[in-house]
Amino acid sequence: MFDLITKRQTTLRNDVLAGLTAVLTLIPEAIAFTFVAGIDPLMGLYGSFFIGFMTAVFGGRPAMISGAAGSMAVVTTAFIIMFGLEYLLAAVILTGILQVAFGMFKMGKFIRLLPHPVMLGFVNGLAIVIGWAQFNQFKDNTHVIYDAQHDLFTYAGDWLALTSPEMLTMMGLIALTMAIVHFLPRMTKAVPAPLAAIAICTALVSFTPLDSKLVSQVMLDQRTSMIEKEIINERFEAIKADIPYGQYADVAASIAAERPTKEEIAARWQENQQKRVENGDKESVEPLDGSLKGELPSLHFPQLDWDLSSSEAFGALMKVFFLAVILASVGLIETLMTLSLIDEITQTKGNSNRESIAQGSGNMLSGLFGGMCGCAMIGQSMICLNSGGRGRLSGVSTSLFMLIFILFFPRVIEIIPVASLIGVMFMVVIATFEWSSLRLFGKVPKSEICIIVCVSAMTVILDLAIAVGIGVIMSALIYAWNSAKNITITTTEDASQKVYHISGNLFFGSITDFKTSFTAQDDPDQIVIDFASSRLFDQSAIKAVHEVSEKYMALGKTAYLRNLNAESARLLINADDIIEVNMEHDVKTPMTA
Image 1 (cartoon, rainbow, N blue to C red):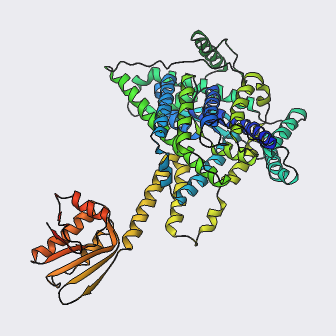
Image 2 (image 1 turned 135 degrees about the vertical axis):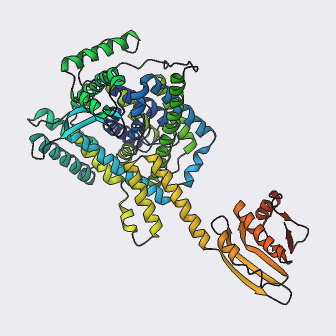
Image 3 (image 1 turned 90 degrees about the horizontal axis):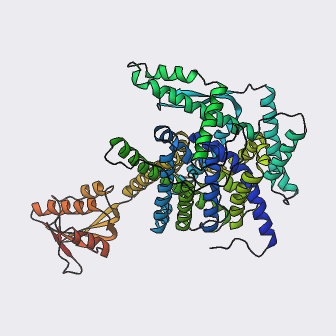
């Protein structure tokens, strides 16, 4: 369990450098995902540390990086607005408990039920989502708007002009980063290409006249926008009950348009900081800026209203439970599918149950120390693998570097240009997308192409859990349809009896062809149904056999079952209230209703 390093020094070096590279892209991603969720960025960073460390040390897949994930952040957005931070932390803890239970009951094997087309659709859809998320950094003037469709306040921004100096600089740095990541490995692999690209771009922005958005600016914009949304929410709640019928959306939109002043935002930030100091969550009040400086997180038990007699409190607690179920499902699906993908890339096999337990433990710790929930991150995992990471130390290094940077070297992270991180993530998108799937058209059944396209689209439009569920259902229905078409019935006849030879599986999808193949009116008094090349699978099959038997009995004729395998015979015996089977004869089993 604690095989953190191997005997080869090169593996130790590669794992440490891969962890350093991964953390430089994980930190901005974690910050961006907290912005989506509407919480303080440090919650995402601390959550990434706890989850990443636990999964790296105790998990079932070395070199897989876990942290605060966007797929889980999206799920929590509306919940935070409705119930607040304390209930979110409770949901994070419960999410961890459910994931630990999933692993302890060894339910990770259900990942085997995911067909390959679903996996391809998941990977392609996730690559598109990762790539599309980067375009948010091409906007400025972030502000709060009212989303009438989802009935909540959210964020929007204005696209940078295509020919503006800021846009041109960003595009240039992105192109430089992608070029370094692509060509440097052909010359040397002594230093991970993404790390070299980030360092070069940071040096260009720091020591030349080039001006580009830095991580610190993103942090400041996010914190400012969060405070702005908090103030706007309070303004709206104060007049919500007095809004005339039919004017709800218009009033909400007008309040969002009345943006708070800089003085109001600064005062609210100071007020929130003072409350955290009084609660023991912080040591001192800090100014509103883009710094990443933070203290070691302190243990904090969520403060909930446990008054079950109150319908409002009871409803909130039920929402916590349902949110935890959704978060646990989304996190496990994304993690186990990422695990399978890395297994395929590295030609090794991970332990899904062990990974589930480790991830659940990490989420529980994250919730108890004020962090957000998370799971495996395919983008950072691919960066780690492409940078040479293979052992557990790569994941441990990622989490420890994150904590070290936040506590001791925040300036190193703050001065990184966002454009270089976008370039790295674009290369991750290119590496993650299964380009080979585009060559499958005309070479595999159209049904599988349809599954790949649908899962990819649903991952982008809806979310990962729904997309995978749709893909599995589609695969099951297509399998059932194809199996139903494979049943064939042939007959042989002599002077005394007629034999129906059944070939194929008898289940709900094939019973129609089975029942319509018998010609009871024209058959002799004795027929045999031979199941040597078939078997019964479900109650629909039992009922179909029963109905065929009744048809012959109504005409005064006799039907026999022959060559039933043990499982099929057991199905009929267990359904004795529907059908009776005389098992006394080895060759012919007469069947009566």
